[in-house]
Image (cartoon, helix red, strand yellow):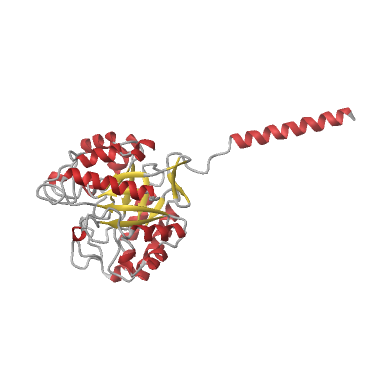
Length: 341
C-alpha cells in the first residue's frame, strides 16, 4: 500500500513538473520583432505600441533630384531614428526598385516600413488604370476588375518576397483609393486583403483610405474595413490649412476612430500635413508646435500611429514637404512615444 501511495505521488509530481515546463517553455502568441495587433491596439513583442513618424515617398526614388536620398543618406537617417519607428513610403509597381535596399537598411537599424503597394492618385508613375495621368485617380473599371492584370500580381510578388522580414510593419493595399463608388472600393479592398493574407500571414494589412467624407459617410467607411483580413484603417487629414482654419483635431478623426473601434481594429493617421516654409503663412517652428499638438491628441485618443507628410532630403519651397534639417524631424525623433518603444 505504501509503495502504491509513493508511486502515485511520484507520478503526480512528475506530471506537475512536466506541466510546469510546458507553461514556461510555451511559445508566445506573437513573432519576435513583428508588429501585430490585439483588437484595437498595435503590439510589438508583447507590449502596446504607438508611433509618431513621417511619410517619405522620396525614399523609394520618386521626386525631384534634390529631394532624393542616396543609400548612405538613408542608412544615416534610419540610424538616427528611435528603434522600431515606422516609416511610410511607396512600393508600387512603378517604384519598387529600391525596396530591397530599404528593407535591408531597415532590418539593420530595427526600423519598420509601412509600404503602400499602389497609388490611387496615380502618382510616381503608377499609371495603371489612370484616367489622365499623375494625380487624377484611377478609372472605376480598374477597381472592378482592371486591378487583377498588373497590380494584383505585383502585390503577390511583394508580399511573398518579404513575408519573413520583421522590417515590414504593415502592407498598405493602396494609397487613397477613390473615383469609384464605395461598394466597389470595398470589394476591391476585401479581395486584395484576402490575397495578401494568403501569401503573407505574418504582417498586418492596412487599407490606405482617406476618411468617411470620401466614401459617402462613416458607415460606408466602416463597411469597407469589415473584413477579417483588414487590420488597420487609415485617415488622411490636412485640415490645418483648410480655409486657414488652423485646425488641430480634424473633425473626421473621432468618427473614423469610432468606426474602427466598433470593428475592434486599429486606426492610424496615415497622412497629416501643414504648409510651411519660406513665404508661407505658418512658420516652420509653428508647424512643429501644431504637429506636436496633433500627435498629442491623436495618439492620446488611441490612434496607433501618426505620420507627417512629407520628409525629403531637401525642401526648397513653401509646402507640406520638409527637409532633414527642418525642426520637424527632431521633434519626431524626440517625441515621447518613440522613446518608449
